[in-house]
Length: 475
Ligand code: NAI
Image (tube, rainbow, N blue to C red; front, top):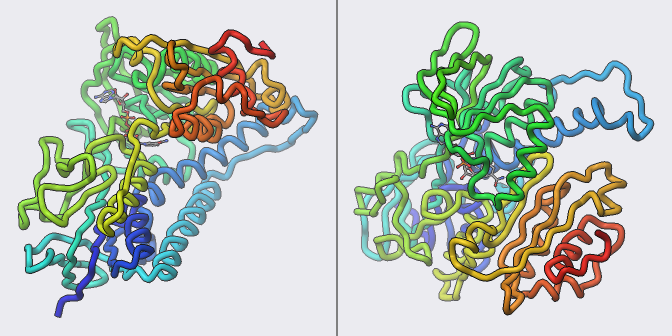
């Protein structure tokens, strides 16, 4: 006997679990199916973000930052540390505990919102009268029928051709977050978001880190001026970043991994490392979903085809997050999940794709919203730019972290803010003000006229806005 639901959500990551909660809030009878298992075989809700992505990486970044501060910066404050050591197994155990708190938090939220949770893998069985039959296989063996189905199955790491992940020596984000000893030499392929975040963690803990990047430019999607500033800071910290490389054969031996590569000048090189992290992007995940059973359309990349409102090729079937077009970001998935739940309930869900913030959690952090200077040039938009360095900010000086700047771009005639780009301390938090400003279509003058508390890093945003009108007060 099948169980009937108004909405079945497949996948319990940020896109899926948030969609399930919002649909339940709106009075729908909701099921969520997720197969992720913790080390005891129990459910581990939260998907890649919670289990092997955003949350564990931030836990490790925090630990490695503490270690870095104790090693290099405490002395400036008059604090002497004797016998400093790092227990990386304990650091990883702490990270696992943080992950578990988040997993359990979602289970609690499901109970609170009366979302029925099924631990197993969901696949499409067939279309039935008034909906779709979904088979659940795993700890829970069930047949469910849903009037609406929201697919939120996420993405998986893309492997380098000829070098499959073994998670012992060739690591995806999964293995990169589970190393319990600091590798002496660490190689990374790809200097994108994961490469830089993971490279930062393990460099701070003492690894010699080399990143091989295929593109000739560093962080091509980031505003050029900001990317240059970040590159300077990373190189100064000791990250070796090779741009414009072609990666050749990868050999796994008893002692480590050997990567043959060619540099930008076409010269053959070799990199010998203890571990190799491959972070060259992610691919949409529809493994085991059985989309062909109902004729659900995928594109050539394997992503589920959706329109601007996350409607798939089938009536009543929706898809959100990494498994569809657009940036692979947890918060983008969440917004889509909420909007879809609201559309199912007859409301007008909305996602503004122009104001989705990006954050790279390195030190210094990089965050931005809106268009870069190079995009504005390419689009032929006349703009004004204002920058303010953290070097001139009192709070940044007191923190002892004056790297970077805030850069604001505004329309030359209307003064509407078109983009804000930050590299520096707490950029991830500072960007929120800029997202709000852009969402409300603020001008740079609006930010310049708003009272910002002193002494805060956020004064740098106000000063960057003042710089657009060439009237900074503190620089
Ligand atoms: P990415 O797309 O950010 O970067 C991949 C990099 O690898 C690019 O620079 C690309 O040019 C390079 N590359 C590709 N093929 C290569 C090859 N054969 N040889 C050398 N270089 C090569 O992908 P990444 O870092 O794997 O992250 C995957 C996704 O996860 C991203 O879409 C990102 O948005 C998301 N993510 C977001 C985070 C955040 O918001 N803080 C944190 C971690 C991941």
